Image (cartoon, rainbow, N blue to C red; front, side, top):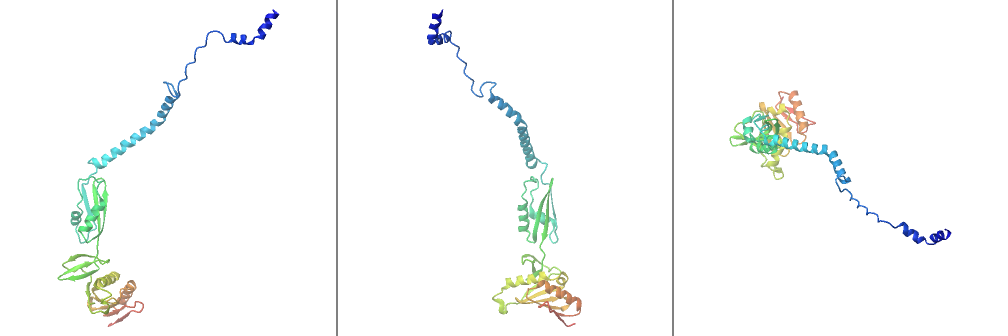
Length: 283
C-alpha cells in the first residue's frame, strides 16, 4: 500500500490526465449581438422612445393641421374676402374719387391684398392726397382714410389758380381761388438778388411766409408780394399792407402782427420786419 501511494504521488501528470479525461463538454452557444432578437435592448429603447415621443408627434401633427386649415380659411375659402370698401377724410375730393383711384380688388382674399400698393395708387392718381391709411376691416372690409393737402398759396395761371401746399408742392389747378388763400405775386426780375435767388427759391420763401401766418391773419391776407429774398409784403383786406421783410423769424413776426392788428384795428400799414420792434402807421 505504501508503495502504491508513493507511485501516485511521484507521477502528478497522470493525475492531471485523469482529471481531464472523460467526454468533452458541449460548446457554449454564441452570445446574441447587442440589440438583436425580438427582446433585445435596441428594440426596447425604440419602444420607450415611441412612448415618450408619441405626444410630441401628435402635437406636431395637430399644429400642421391647424396651420393648413388656417391658411385655407384665409386664402382659399370665401369667408374672408373683400366685399366692402369705404373712404373717409375727404374735404375737396369725394369718397367716390378715392375709391375709383384705389381700385381695390373686390372679391379677393382680404389677407392677400397689398395695402401699400393701394395707397400708392391713390397718391399717384390723386395729387391732392397727401397721405392715405389703408386698413383691413375684418372679416370683409377695406378702409381708406385720406389726408388732403391744404393750399397756403396760389399761383395765377391764365384764368386759373395753381394750389401750393406748405411744402411747396403744386398739387392741383382750380378755376376759382379758394377763400382765405393768398395769391402770390413775384416781381423779382429787377431785383439785384435775382441771380442768387431764382423764382423757385423765392416761391419757397413765399410759401414759408404764408405757412407762418396765424390762421386769423391768413384769412385776411389777399396777396403775398415778393420783390426779393428779404422784401416780402402782404396785402390784407380793406387795403392794409404789412412789411414782412425776409422769411426768417416767421413765427415771431406772426405774433407781432397779431398783436398790432388787435392794438390798432384802424391802422393801414404795419411793419414787422424786425419783430422785436414792430411799427404801425395810418391809424
